[in-house]
Amino acid sequence: MTHDASAYGLWPLVILNSAIFIIFAFSFGKPQSRRDWRSFGAFSAFIVALFTEMYGIPLTIYLLSGWLQTRYPGVDLTSHDAGHLWSTIFGFQGNPHFNVLHILSNLFILVGFILLSAAWKVLHAAQQQHGLASTGPYAYVRHPQYVAFMAILFGFLLQWPTILTLTMFPLLILMYVRLAHAEEREARDAFGARYEAYAAATPAWLPSPIGHRPAGSKSGGVARR
Image (tube, rainbow, N blue to C red):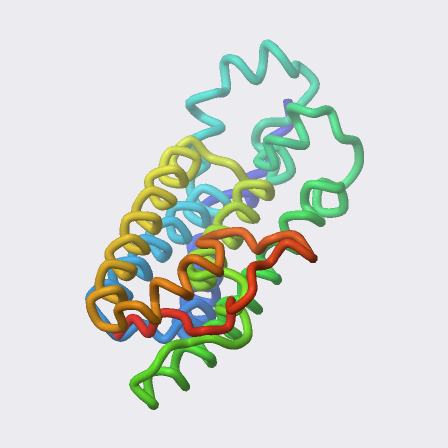
C-alpha cells in the first residue's frame, strides 16, 4: 500500500468547501425565523462533518480499515479516491469523479440548490403580501425548501458516504418532517379552510404524476414566517 500524504489533512480545503456550500445554502434559503435557523444549522453541521472527512481526517476509513483491507486488498486506503466508498464497494473502475453515482450526486445537489432558490423567491413574495405561496414549486409540493435540503444531502451521500453523515441523514429527514408538520399546524390556524383546500390538493413531498393532480392545487401554500 502506497501512502499519499497529501490526500488528507487539507484543512484549508475543509474550510473553503464548507464555507462555499453553507454560503450557497444561506443565500438561497434566506433563514429568518428560529425554525429556519434550526434547519439551516443542521444542514451546516452535515456539510462540515462531510468535508472534515473528505479533506481533513478520514475517520470512516480508519474505523473500517480492517474490513476494507480484508475485502478489498488492492485498494490504497490512504488515497483520496478510496474515500468514494460506493465506488470501492461496487467495484467501479477508473476515476470515481466520473462514474454514474458521482454524476447522479452532482445532479441531486444542483437540482436541490435550484429548487431551494426557486422556492425562496415564491415564499418571500407571499410573505410580503401576507398571503400564501401558490406558484412555482409550491404549486407541486407543500414543502419544496425541505425537499431541496433533502436532495442536496442525499447527493452528498452518493458522492462521499461517512459513518457520521449516514447517521445524521435520517435524523435530519425526521427533523425536516417534524418542522413541516409544525408549519402546517400554524398555517391551518392562520388560513383555515384556504390552507385545508391547498393541502388536500397538493402533495407534501413528491409531486403527483402528470394527469393525477387534483383540481384547485393552486389555491395557496404556506407562508411560514
